[in-house]
Image (cartoon, rainbow, N blue to C red; front, side, top):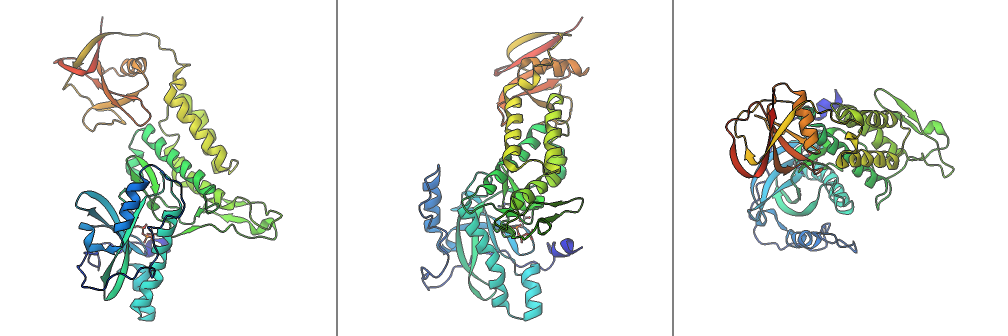
Length: 421
Ligand SMILES: Nc1ncnc2c1ncn2[C@@H]1O[C@H](COP(=O)(O)OP(=O)(O)OP(=O)(O)O)[C@@H](O)[C@H]1O
């Protein structure tokens, strides 16, 4: 129950959000605080200039840069808020949670709020430094930080990052395989980066789904305070023991006295047990199932490292995107379809699962043949409409309909009507 006890103080006894307060006078002492804005000699990347300029003016009291602060959630140590930067861009603010388990527990024991704050703020600073050094599309982007006085403590730190939405496993299980595969692929790309990061091989000691958020359909890691870079030292293999609830592993101890690839393998097994088993095989295209099952088994047994796992997931992506996964299923034309260009059927929806639209049956297809196959296999389906929208893999979104009347002109769509008889 430690995990549970550790969590959730939401609602009860919550501190007020870090409402930015205008502060009188005292100009910021430069050099006294970590400078998230100093990006050293990192290579320029797209958007760097914009991010850098954000850093520059966020060495400011929070009140000067964020507005409309709203509480989002919290964990053991930190509370997260949504806010508007310059009144436009929505961002996430993270600050030490004075009502959280860490600070409250420490204060109960030591009755020293200032020191307890500093102890907890260490995690926030560590996370900020890691977010700054580990730059990848699946690591939450750090925009900067600001200061404010809070609970009589001067200059408490607030970090400002990209805003995400919490990763809800139940919700994910109800989405299309394509979207679930995207989560697994972003996770594997993240773990590949972490295994080869500029800081060495990084492991996420706390790997539950709540350490991640979704931004535009991609998974990103947000909570890095439990990240570790040190590979365990060992004198024999038995020192390299990894214990999980359902399985244990013993890794080889290298001649240098380090547990070989332990950081990478810990991440990978966690990815298997929290993500792959639930998200990868379930309702996947049948021709991809053998490969997906192989990935799930190999990671569950830790037979592969992250490089091989990443390569195999990229392979699945290519098979899916290129339509190669369809090749051994040649369509036997059961039904004729009449093509009606520049036409749309506004009503006549029926529900299907997993649909991209909550009212109608909106699915992604590789091409018109796949759409015909889908319509052939649903007795309800009497027509379908190709839209000009695509999914993240570039597949076309298609509405399946239970009748073809009324049909209206629409320059961006093509309707196919089943010709019966
Ligand atoms: N950038 C973000 N956008 C939206 N929500 C976020 C963001 N970052 C964190 N959250 C939410 O806030 C919660 C708390 O954040 P975080 O995990 O960093 O705090 P913590 O105290 O370290 O938590 P834990 O005790 O779980 O390690 C997360 O579970 C997540 O749902």
